[in-house]
Length: 378
Image (cartoon, rainbow, N blue to C red; front, side, top):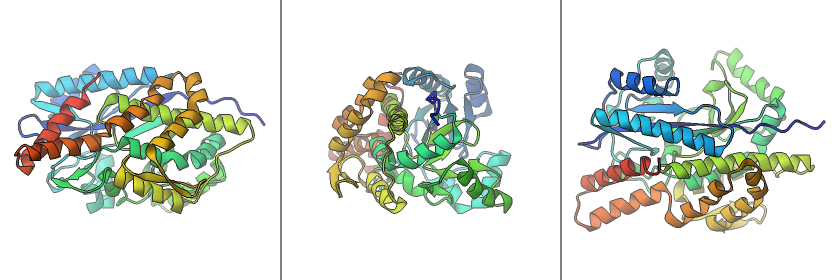
């Protein structure tokens, strides 16, 4: 049976830290009036996060990548302007360079109180921000089929997104330390391969019926069928500091899904590999970002990111043209040329040290860089 083409509409969720402009540290708490003012400007699209120094935005459903970019730009701009009135700034990075997780407080809401009670220390140290991309795939079985296939590409997307090299004032040696922090929670990482929608729900129902989880929102996999919307939600990447970089990740993800759907119509499918093998590429992406290679399982060898990204761009070009996001997809080459946010943060830190700064001063310089880059181009 031939399925109707999915709409491939798109939405983005982003989480931001709020920092004190003077100390560059995270603010200990958000004034209620700040959130109320944000809500007045962007009703229904901004909310508190688990940690009190974070906010989350969610765009309306957008027809294409260009429209969703406009939504994210407007949301970043609105929150940044309100925060500035309070002597604060937002930063779009998956970890803060020197904030101490033990000093943070969680938001007093029932959902978050239950999480704190259930997960204890592992959730208290969840001082990280992410980006989630929703792409609408109306047919449920198709949603699962495409999830099984697109999982192969999640390490490539993670490598391009890395923005969390520092943790509590230390260079971790990883480009995405967020991934390591998040992996301490249960039900994270790569999803299982499922035979279809009913197979997926049979597994979820075991946990729900046992009283372990309430519903699918308690699955925090790198990619999952949304429990609220008819979308396939990609959660594997760091949040990009520059808006254009985040839009490129969204465009690549949307185009990959469209490519896999097109191949299905041609009676082709992307070969699925074991989660053990893909997990090795996830590790290489979080460790090295774009500076080292990933395993090409078809070739059975390590291949550099520039070659792999060129191949992905060629693979999805036809679909990106239909979706109207060729320019955004090709911006991936600019990320490779310039470096990810993680690469740039390390560069700013090392240059500050080379010019005589103390370590804390160099970390403050990194925060200044993040403040400026978060609102660049919006």
